[in-house]
Amino acid sequence: MKAKAQFPGFPLFDTADRIHEQSDFELYPGLKSALSALPLPVADIHEDFRIAHRFVVKYSDVPGTFNRFRGEIQRFLNYTWLIGRRTLAQADSELISSYFAFMKTPPASWVSRGIYSAFVSSGGLRQPNFQWRPMALRSKDTQAPYSVTQASLNASRTALQTFFKYLVSQDYLLRNPLLDVRKRDRSAKPNLNLDRDADVRRLTDWQWSYLLESLTELASEDASFERHLFIIVTMKSLFLRVSELAPRPVDRGQWRTPTFGDFRRTVVDGEPYWVYSVFGKGDKTRQVTLPDAYLGYLKRWRTHLGHTSPLPVPGETSPILPSRKGAAIGKRQVQRIYEQAMVATADRMEREGYCDEARQILAIRSETHYLRHTGASQAIEAGADIRHISEELGHANATFTESVYVNAEQARRRSEGRQRLV
Image 1: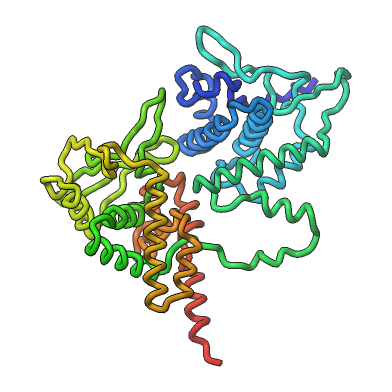
Image 2: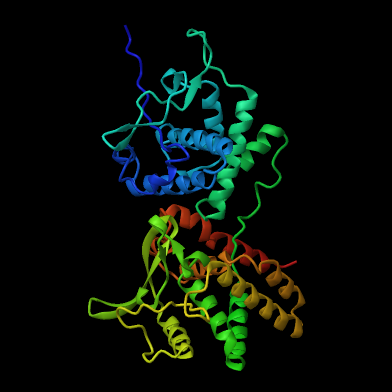
């Protein structure tokens, strides 16, 4: 008799009242071992889990939504890792299409007869329940085959749509892969948008130069703009997100505030370098090398704040962006300062007759990622190794970095096209 195939996966998320305990694996050693045993890079798998966990936690106070999203995301991740042999950051429309086909006719080992809890308690720890499966047959007829209803497929699509929008907003995916699948399902007509160039969210070299020049002049005339100048230059030059310049919550109600102590001088092969430690997405710390040209802006900012030393010294605990009361300004304030800088630059453009350019700047006045993308794109175009830039951006792999920032062939094609004679 042929042996029944064993389910190769495992549950990922505990119940709503326990989901917060999974921010680390202290109480979930079995889950940690299962993730590490997958045939994919361990660091990428852990990053997938962390961002999916943060998404699910967002809905832990809404029982119905939490249960739907929790069930769908852990089923999709099991499929992505075990069947698709990809990480979440590599999800595309091909993977999503195959996933929906898989849900219609899943292997018997992926289906349980009845509902089982995802985790069970054992010796004060939470262990994956070996009886749990991504899909369940609720029929009392033990011989009935598994089948999925259109309503279930629609619910899965809704959950994934929300999940992918979150991943795009967190810069984990470049594009929502479900969008193309939905269009093909809805219509057999050809997609007229397939031949469009990728939309690179970055400033042109002229826009960046104009922005920098405008803020430098404003800061020289009005000291209140020193903060604007420093924030804009820092986000662009060090590839930072808004959240990486503001206090962020960490485990057990503690907060981490960016301080001048995060700037550190190091020596490599006898040469001095400055680096900045970023507490970034996924609660991971990365090191970003400071360009020599950036040090002048750092000195200028410290002089404005009244620090006695031009550059940070070891052990400094003062916030990089202090508020008037001495604490650090928050994420919303950093966002607001960015918007004010963009509006001030657009005002100058209008005064100098660059009306079209002013409208373009105003259209992206809330899109802070433009600075991060501009800095990375310019660095790569200047010849920097994409692997190094990928590490300093905090990306899971260089392939994702290349898909977002490298546009050399498109630029060359457009340049050659402009030079053709009529």
